Every structure is written in structure tokens, then in C-alpha cells.
Length: 401
Length: 114
Image 1 (cartoon, rainbow over the protein chains, first blue to last red):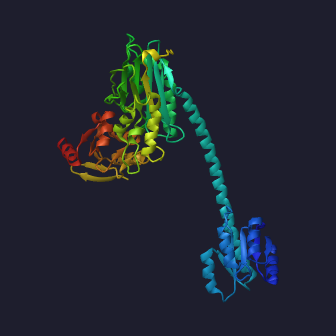
Image 2 (image 1 turned 45 degrees about the horizontal axis):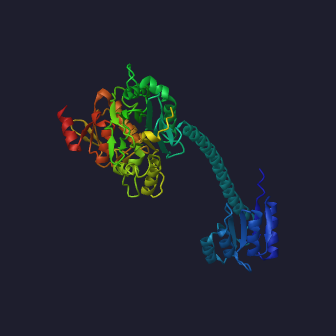
Image 3 (image 1 turned 180 degrees about the vertical axis):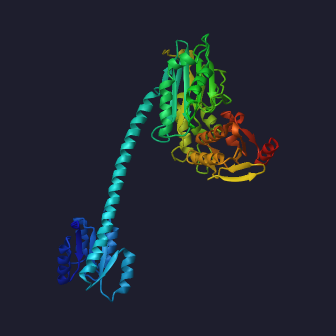
């Protein structure tokens, strides 16, 4: 098998010695490049892309040590293998050469076989580095493809989410959706169910990343206004969100794995402001009245898809005009600062309570800002969803059923 | 990752061996506890004294272990921090697991019930 025609720079001030070495190297099947001193060798190294330099230790202008130092300062994206030519009496200089980055030595007057062996060693290392670089390139390409697919998946996931700052039946709805990876295990929805009622939900799938996002997207496709109309009302047409969650629990408890999700869903009557809601392991929401007084909504409930026999309760609340409801996934309360202190539900409530000084449509971004500050800019470790609904006073209601 | 200690009669106390039981180590935790169950352990106490944080994956693993034991034995929990206790309450896990303040009360209660 013929050796690859690698370029080798021969830095040697003695013309005779240089020509002799170059002819040997060319005979070995390499491409020898002559340099009469260290400066020329350095320039040629940059120009030719040679990955092996055989250098004399003693040279005018720039000697072998200086050349090695300069070569190591270059940022070429590949390694240059430096073999130093030394006299038999230059043992002390070898230590210095090693210190500045020489890789190997050949004693002047050594046999051709020795030179050949040294060059082969260098070639082996260069080939090995090339193989590693190629593997890295392939992995990087594969990674880029995966990331591209994930970004497409994330875009598809975002398309499922309602438009930000929608006005739905006299409620202003705003949200923030911050995946911890490219895709998120969170999902939420808010839509008109009929002329009088509005439905909303927020879901947080256990875990995060691709695995959780697949389930969250499946839920996003499943839980539509039709799904609410079919499962979240009893036979007499009264809101029954607990039944919808029970149906989801039956459906998702069938799986053998540990996947589950938490959910908060409700139905709001646009005329009376009456809310029927069901909480399934999702953090309690915060209701902030028009005077800026916040209260927690919900005292817990079983997650969905975890326990097949779990039962769920309907709860009620009143949503006054001029008030807001803030729903926030556990990523907010669990977000830890640099001292590992969690943000906590009290601080989540404090941000919710910025309302009404801050309009509800700004609260989601306020939450993101507060968490960003809390974490000193470090990305969240879990997917964050913040949904804020404000029941507008009747005079500024644009009915949009 | 887990550390175990056996108390008479055949009660195994498990310490998760990590300050945080999360998506990062939940599977390893579940696999190791499942090995104990497959090895015949039926009376288990998971002591959370040294665990400050449990995320949704950690909770999923814990419930997975409970399902694995099923009717063959018992799984109790002890030493929950106030934050983890709050999460248990919101998820109604306090109705699914028997929770004790500390491991000694859990061992004593489990021993008496046998």
C-alpha cells in the first residue's frame, strides 16, 4: 500500500543536509518542502498546510525551539507534528524542545530506517486525527439534522398554541411558552365553547424534551373545543371539567410506562364570570382581583395517567370583571437560583399580583423576566408556561365568539 | 445510586443517594429499586431525609415502584422536605403513599403492622 503523499517541511540551514533529507523523504513517497531557516519554515507551514515539520535545532534567524513555539501559537485547526533534528551532544536541548512542544527527535546521522520510522509514527497520528475529525464532522452533521427536525417540531408545536393576546369572549388571554429544550412538554389552550362559555386548559407532561413533547402535542390535538363540549359537560349541559379529566385519565392510564401529565382546566361563563375548574396535579392558579389582592385557586388533585382509579373533583370560583387569573407551570416555582433556592410559589404569586398595575397581558412576560433575573440568565431546567386571563369590564369587551 | 439498610423483620430502608431525584436519575432509581423488589424485598421505606428536590420524573419513578410492588408488599415514604411535601399535597400523593415524618416512625409502624 503506498503511503499518502503528505507534505513535510524540512527546516535545515545546511543546504547539503537539507537536500539529502528532502531526497530521502521524497523517495519515501512524501512531498518534501525545503526551508532554509525557521522563518521560512513557519511561512511555508501556513501556506502549504504541511502537518509534519522536521527541523534542525540550530538555525539562523529562528531556531528549532523558536519555530516550534511559533507553530504552537498558530491556530490552524489541525496539529503540526514537529520532529527535531539534534546532534548526539544536544541532549539538554531536547528537554527544552519537548517543553515548547516538539513531538519527536532524530539524531543527526541516524539511519534511513530510523527516519522512516519517525515519519511513519507522525503519519499514523495524523491519520488518526483525520479519522477523529471525520467522525466529529459526521456526528456534527447528524446533530444538525436532528436539531433541524426538532426546530420543525417546535414550530409545529407552537402552531397548536392559541394566538398570544387574543381577545376571547371578553377575556384578554396572554401567554408565555418557554421550552427548556427546543420542544416542550407543556401545552395549553383557550377557546370559545359556545356563545356563553369559554374553555381553557394547561398541561405539563412529566419530564421534558422530545419524549414529553410528543405526548404534549398529542394532548394538544386531542383537547379541542369539541372535546370540551363532548366530555366537560354533564347530561344536563352543566360544566363538568372533572369528567373530561377522568376520561383523559382512563385513556392515558393504559400505557405501561411512567408517563403522566398534570392539568388545570376550566370553563368560564362569560356573562356571570362563574368558573368551573378541575385541578389535576398542576400548580394552583392565582386569582388577582381588581384591587391587586391575590388568592390561590385549587387545592390539588391527582395527576392524569398515573393512577387508573383516581377520581377528580369539580371546583368553583368567581371571576369578577377587572380581575385576572394567572396559571403557571411548576417550572416557575421550582426554578432555582445559583444558591439552589427555588423561586417558590410565593414569588410566583408576587409576580401575578403585579396586576392590575401591570395589565394581565404583560404578566406572562413579567414572570419570564423575574425568573430570568432569579436564575441570573441561566436557562430554565423545565418547560415553562404562563397563561394570564383578564376579564375585561363590559364597556371594553369585544365579543369574539 | 441507592443505599439500602435492612431492619427486622425484612424491612428495607432505601435512601435515594442523591440530593435531587429528577429526570437525570429517576430511571436509575426506579431500576435499582425494581431489582430489590425482583430480589424478594416487599416491605420498603424510601427515606427522603437527604432529598431536597423531587421533580415530575422523580415522582413518576416513585409511583412506578409502588405499582411494581402492587399487592405483594408495602411502600412507605419518610422525611419529606416541606417543598416535596407541598408537591405531594398538590398531586394528592399523600393519599397514595403512607408518609411518615421520619424513618424510625416508618420502620416502627411497618414492623407493628406485620
